[in-house]
Image (cartoon, rainbow, N blue to C red):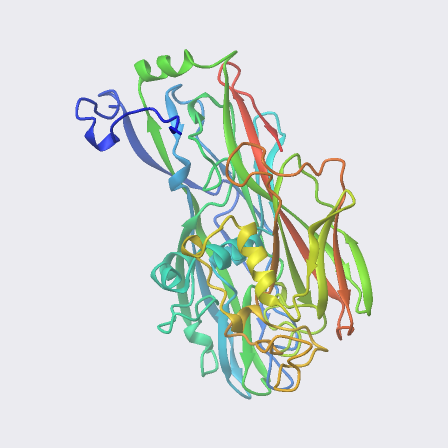
Length: 489
């Protein structure tokens, strides 16, 4: 039996062909867009006072501030935004207004990375409509870096992302603060860190699959909303009787790469457009938060996720209660197994997976599902930094594994958290019909409500805050004649 294959030669042997060439008048240039409404964002005075060893008595707060960036638009019809090179850059500076007394600070670490300073990012079009809105921006970024970047790569990118550079390749936390390490801060302290990391966006950043013809847009505004809680985990060595610091973000900029392909090339492009419409496929994220009571038995929690094409779902479980080593020392950036013996999603009455996993006895199966949800279907393509010590963390009320518990839970499970590392139990589920093969390849959740179903045989000590994130397809429709842009998501 013959195989119906066309006879040909490898592309490496097609010596009579050459790749395309851009017109001689094409050029590219960098554009640095500074914030249009503020020059800096400063926290209120942060008290380091503590009654004993542990976190400061008053949870350190930041300030929720919208930072707007007006992108240069409409300069030339042949100008495009190369979304592969879009980055956010800024500096964070620590100053001290009241010298620490009574004890010292053992250590302080930025939670996850520099992106944790931001809780939301959204894009507004010319007519005022919101084209993309990513809630829990820092938390989503943390999920992606945990599942896509291996420890060695984290170390090599630590400067820009604000990661902790760990010579043992075992770290998943942000960098330390020297003024808050084995000492009490003084009024002479001024410590600055600079950051620059890729923009997470389905239209302007690394989630987009095409260039944006920004020269034929009327207006486009990008906004970042800073975090309400200071994303720094501070551990006091003992009772601090005084000490006040301030964290200031400055030089906040959106760094873009523009490409002008010239008049002749834009004419060839226009000839391919129907009714002047161009299409960009992007991947974006929608997040909702739901409370999980601390009870025994089955629970079905409505996630409130909507989308025409949901590619994957991810859940994170934050131990409630006071910030301490028993609960979640790193606040919402810690995620632990809520003592679940069964875990699955329910969409329109159908379970995903159809045979729910038991993450307590089989975290490897839960981890494999999460691996598939991020789009990695073989081990060589998986770049996770989630080692078992970070992934296998139990909520308060659980029991650390021992030689006598092998029949009820995996041997890797431990209790407690620390400011030196994040607990990162993340449960994901792949929902693509045919993975990575088509546009709008996920499940429609427009009219099908999304629930997360959990069964516990032991009640956790605290209620859990559950963050459910949907990875969704987005199609941006840009009419180059009117300059209008719309989104289908």
